[in-house]
Length: 55
Image (tube, rainbow, N blue to C red; front, side):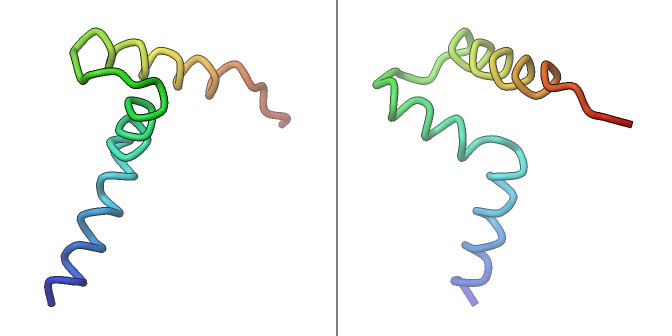
């Protein structure tokens, strides 16, 4: 049962971008902070909405 709960927890973390944020911190060798989270979110959202969708 704990394996199922762990899987669900990991899926929820990915949906909330926490997994991507942790990978971002590890890749850039930075510590968690409010300013770093803000930069991460701003960069992620600007990439998401910069791509125009057709129709």
